[in-house]
Length: 105
Image (cartoon, rainbow, N blue to C red; front, side, top):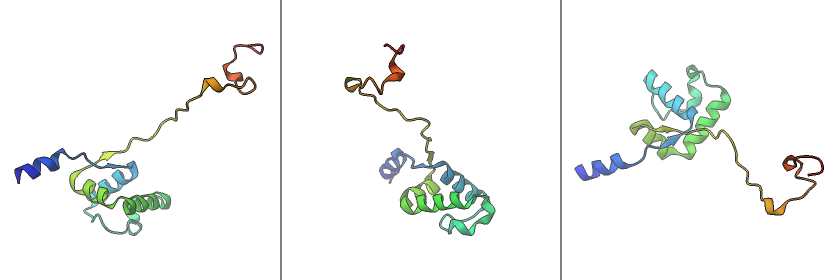
């Protein structure tokens, strides 16, 4: 039993979106159950769109949701920016004005 317990403790906590983390905290604070239909909880203050996102995420990641409810979770960090690689070996003078120091290069 001790060996199994240590293996369970070593597992990483599931990563959940911020809205799901809020959902879990509100339900636990209000003493509500984790498997009720989110649309029946009007008192949570979530918009209809947010509730739909929560329902969709829970339906797609049921095991992660239950592990998050029981064991805790890590909140997903939002993507703040997007990096795009520019292949400079395939440059086109007409498209690369932003790289030019002057109009005559």
